[in-house]
Image 1: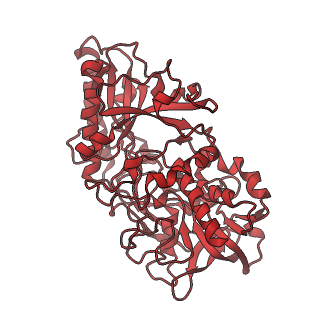
Image 2: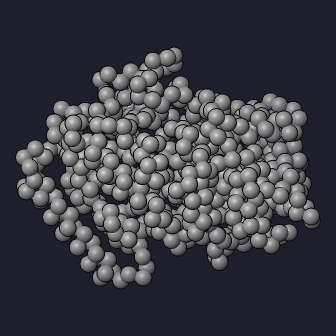
Image 3: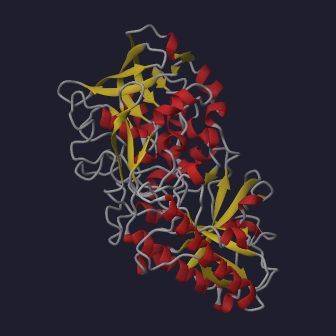
Amino acid sequence: MLIDGTSIPNGAKLAADLCVVGAGAAGISLCLQLANSSLSIALIESGGLEPDPSTQQLAAGENTGLAYFPLDSARLRCFGGTTTHWGGYCRPFYDIDFEERSWVPHSGWPIKRADLVAFYPAAQTLCQLGPFDYEPQDWQLSDVPPLPLAGQDVRTRLIQFSPPTRFGVRYRNAIRSAPNIRTYLHSNVLAVVPTVDGKRIERIDVATLSGNRYTVQARTFVVAAGGIENARLLLASNQVIPHGVGNQFDLVGRFFADHINLDTAGIFPRDPKTSFALYQTTSRDHLRRMCSGAGPAVSLMGYLELSEAVQRSDRTLNYSADVNETFWTDYFLHDQRYYGEDRLYRDESHSRLKDMEDMLSSIWQNLSDAAHTAFGGSGSTANRVFYKVTTTQEQAPNPDSRVTLAEEKDQFGRPLTCLCWQLTDLDRHTIKVAMQRLAQSLGGPAGIGALHVAIDLDSNEWPTHLQGSWHHSGTTRMHRDPHLGVVDADCRVHGMDNLYVAGASVFPTNGNGNPTLTLVALSVRLAEHLRGKLA
């Protein structure tokens, strides 16, 4: 049943066996696994069936670290969450992503990939994907072959594309018709409120923009509101525990991570007949292929990644890159993306004159590089199509990259979010190693082409065109030790008997893969755990 929260009488007290906060990919996946069971479920969603500006304003906040997107545009508050504008990229995490790596501080999950593999097929189905297989050799790719890279340092793996699945549309009827699920829309959770002893959650406090307020009591609660909002909600729930729920060791909100999105280099093919078709994002609609096993045709794309052997020998993070056809005007002028008064990336400490000076200096340098390539370079590369390499790598866990509460308040008087996104030297080192290894893999006996690196790999400053990927994770990280993580291996908040967290915020590390498939698999796993616990 779908219920408009504005219709709930002011002061009402609702009850359920399980209360889930957030109807995005994580929350909906969890509820679907428990639909039609004996458990009564209350699913609480801030928005309605479609996004609306008034509700989106509740996601606003400030950025104090590396330049980042406006927070109220980075996530959608509506039924279906951010899958409403999701691109559909899906790939799993691999063994090394779960390992404690001595050269990656704060790495290591309390579970192994083997503990999650059993739940990936269900996630594949929920995301409307093909077989759980991402290795090029297992698919029919004869007319779009992977690049014949030299050696084993860099390899091709595959992305499967969800249609993309709009969870709020695809699964609306299933959630609506489940007799044991009541979904409350336009309902904003203001706090999760513990008992006096601080060991259990007693209730959640809910308010609507129309003014009515109500509470929900449950045997168990799951917070599934996204990588930023999960942390904000726990931090702002400080009525009983002054520093916030689950924050006894100052970990909630820390270790915020995203995938680096950085135009890094260009590939200039030696032979114009070399096919890069597998790697083109623009080809996703027609690159439908069959797996050598069973299953329907699936939209695929290739990407490049560093092998596990290189990650270990060169002590890097898990690196991956997109490769897309481009033009010199895009490639050589990308270093300064200027948006005038409305530009996303603006350091207010700089004057407009300084902005213009930096922009003109960047353009001059890029034009010089372009002229050298087109006219001063070898005939083999002049005036030919080439390909842009965009880094999309894992971010090193960093406790100083964090979500905190801002001074400014929202319409309900709750603190807005303050995001301080920070990267480390390991992030920079990984890109440098990746460019060296990629150049070797493309050149020499492979004869694929030359690599032109577009950024200063030795600079202490990140390029101004650095972006995130809207893949918010890490802020309620998973660890066996409550001194090192917010939730345990079952996603239960340390020190709380009946509070769990779902979504990418529990990732201790974010691998190089898009998070949706893995967070859905974790939600399916959590549903199985809760089914046994609440039976």
